[in-house]
Length: 576
Image 1 (cartoon, rainbow, N blue to C red):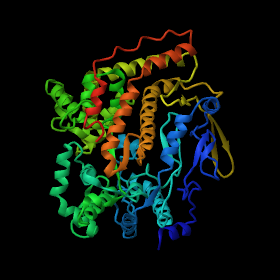
Image 2: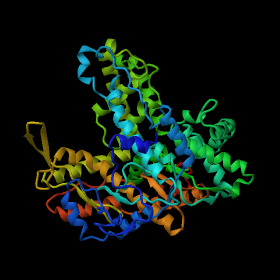
Image 3: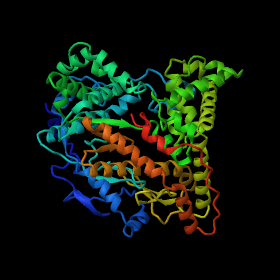
Image 4: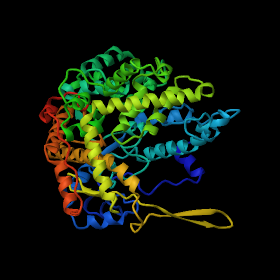
């Protein structure tokens, strides 16, 4: 039975916002663009009418041009990968986004009498059974839409953005911003010859899916060459032999790359092979890259590949080594409990989220989840694990503060200014480098509960007339400001690629183009980044606030370091 038939049998209807078979309507006003018949708003307002009104009176030409450049990229369904994904679903082969059709057995007893309140947390055994239904529905909707659009020569995704300026395709189920399954079944509609470097970048792309993204580019290519027999077996019969592709971090995108590499090799002349597979270049801990550029932080910049090195720098490994070194100098009992347990994975989430304002409690929880997964008996050691994870969290955050002093000082300055503004009852507002007025929508929500004979309904009022949520306004501002900068970098790169006549798409800090154009995209995205951060961004932000709030005296901008921004243009692993 086809997935679409199953959806019909369940009475399931998909959203009206599907991929388009003609190019989207160009954006010309905040309420004019995207779908030709369906009404689409430029921003996903979430009740923030204040921002909606402001947009009517500003120049959004750069925003419109960037979204239009992304929206007119034609795509196609990769039918070979779709066939494999459908077979996984039909034969109950759980893989990536395709969940098992069988429920997991529930535990016979709760984890621990003192931890029963955590029984329904996502990390709890048995929780997955209650999450599987939504996962199955999601997979079916993705497969259904891919099946319906597989015969079209071109499909398009209209774009809009959130209040910070981050761009997203409007269709919720199938798009290039979706999961591994979605990305695996999509390819560019236009095919271009690989040229002299295309096959090289395809192999780098595949090695990244195999978790080899901390090697040099040449070593990644060598890894694929050493495993070429497995690549070939995966391409020739994905369900035979060792099924190497299923072990990749993103199996469906990995399979699509295996197919493309083998086709290119077997054609006899790889340089002339017509390839339509998008190849990705991803930022290295991108939030920290933006902070390092803002503060000209040379130490932090080196750690996140803003500087030229022959090998990629791994910030997570660097932090891990320093955490381990400091732990070994400590006589704390908690330090002894985590002997041999601190690795790259333990500190990674905390390092990633430090730039977005993770708290000590959040960091401790992240580390605890990782350490428990290493096999500790929670029942017997819950208190000790709690203390040990708190110790590692404190140590990790301390190392991050010492390593990324520029980022910490900039984050503290943004937080201090945000606190001053919210104390007067104003929401945080700023203008991004591409001219988008951003206003944080966080307010004290007002709930009203209505009790009927059948059910109890709670209505949430998120009106702009409600008082602001001061704590959330302050804590969310530094990461939201950085998101407005990374989205500006992405859209400006989209415009530059469009000016050069090259295909470009992106998922936030993951930039995509044809394999043959990777070298030129790498040049373009570095040029745009340097141009962006050569501007006095923090000075403009402060001047805007001083004009809007003349009664407030904002602190001086933190002193910048000695990072040479121009070095980014030679930084081979800035995006990798």
